[in-house]
Amino acid sequence: MKNLAAAAIAVVLLICGAALAQGGDSGRYPTRPIRIIVPFGAGGPSDLVARTVAQKMPESLGQQVITENRGGANGIVGVEAVARSAPDGYTLVMGTTGTHGINASLFSKLPYDTIKDFAPIARFGISNYVLVAHPSLSVRTVKELLRLAKARPGQLTWASGGGVTQLAAELFKHSAGIDVVVVPYKGNAPAVTATMSGEVSLIFGGIAQASRLVEAGRLRAIAVSGARRSPALPNVPTVAESGLTGFEAGSWYGLLAPAATPRTIVERLNREVLRVLKLPDVRERLLAEAFEIPLDTPEEFAAHIRADVPKWAKVVKEAGIKVN
Image (cartoon, rainbow, N blue to C red; front, side, top):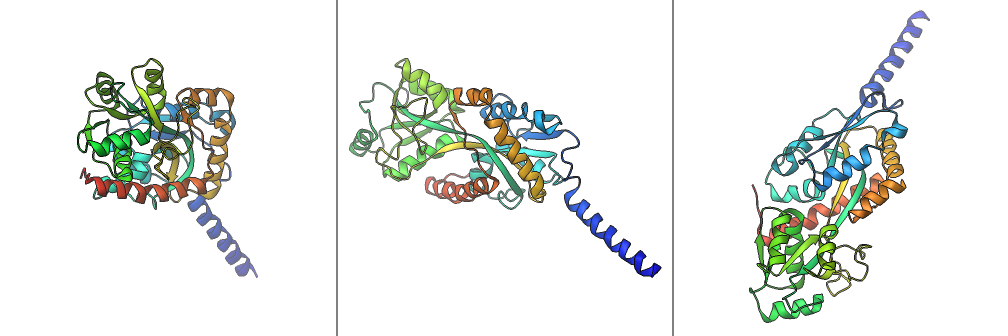
């Protein structure tokens, strides 16, 4: 009997040990500070949304939430660091459309699998764009732009700051079947400046910045890139409702954990992110920067990433873009 009892205890201890190895202290999570790696430099949109949400998370988590900027290689350096981290909920990444939707197509080989190596938690915000033109261009609607582009193939110029804005321009170009010249610039700021000066005719600009230039009469708004009209530009139609059905292009920013992170931790973090995103001061801060606030479940976020990868792969292939 004693031997049987000892054997039974050993089995129980073995099971408990396996559970602890897989889930760690997930039942008491968190018991120490959480780190969110932002895979880009300080001051950008991913940094802004990460810090805005992270500073409110300790209120109910009871632990510090620290943001760490670790840029390099189009976000790959920071994302890889999280993919290789322990799946215990203490090292997370602020993923973006670029890191988890586009890089898989831009780079021939990534040191991680965009989908298999991560557990999506929730998106913090979505930043859409507004298609704006220099006032000298005689178009006010998407239909007028398409007529002009088809009458003057290869003559219209479209500024690109790289990343999603470049692919949004390519998506528009291929969806509309028009021939325009996409002119690359080293970042969105010089691309917008070039459009304001009339050096190029068109650009997909960030709504927060471009809306101020539209109000000042320095640019003319034609359409927004999201699925819905922007509260910042309520009278400007979407590209989709202007004739290019199904068109949607924007940048999302969301929290992800290593793939084997226990479900209980993913759900806890999701609830916490959604709680913070509903706070009036957080909403005010994000809406002031023209972010949409999606309030995703982990499943909804995961489905969005799965749809994003082939969507942007098609655009990258049609445009003939390859970084590596």
